[in-house]
Image 1: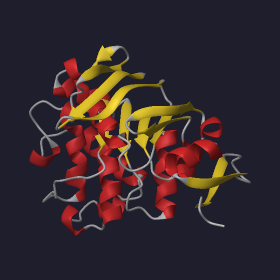
Image 2: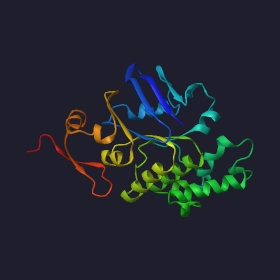
Image 3: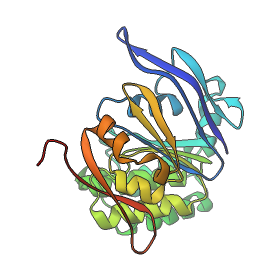
Image 4: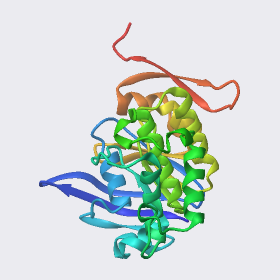
Length: 261
């Protein structure tokens, strides 16, 4: 499923946070959104999963206006993992993952015991795919930050969307689970839009990158073309040295401060 962000502008409390952003993710692509703190990454992504309505512009899924869909129809196409989960669920991990099946159900849910065996199997598979099957019976509030993150990713996978929006999906994860989760996302076949802070992870796992600065797209394209020292100095204020990963061939970056002698 293709995602088109067309001229999206967001204004909050009288301030323009993002302005006239155009972005495209073709079916099956992993597209990363990168930029310094306050550049508008999370605000842009909130528009793509309907947490915010843009002041101007449109988000389309295969040409259909996302904000014109009803909530259930939108949730069948797109799942999201926000940067911060405000709710602390008083449920087990398995029950949290089961919430991903709600857009596909009418009447019964796993929480009331009336959902299908197929739903239960999908949820168990999602937990297993993120390495969290052993957490199924644990209370969500008892989990560590990294464990919670894996359970929430499993919930998004159980939703069986065609588009996955991830805002800092590797937050709280150790390096092994960062690599596992992003590899899983790449293998999923879904169209993925992800905001990432770690430029090396973005370079290794994304087909395309969009660089935001001051609420605008300042560069876009394949990671090797985008992650240039001059741009990184201008946008992030760091000196970057490019190297090639010896196994994958992906561009990787070493950093130091610009004012460092």
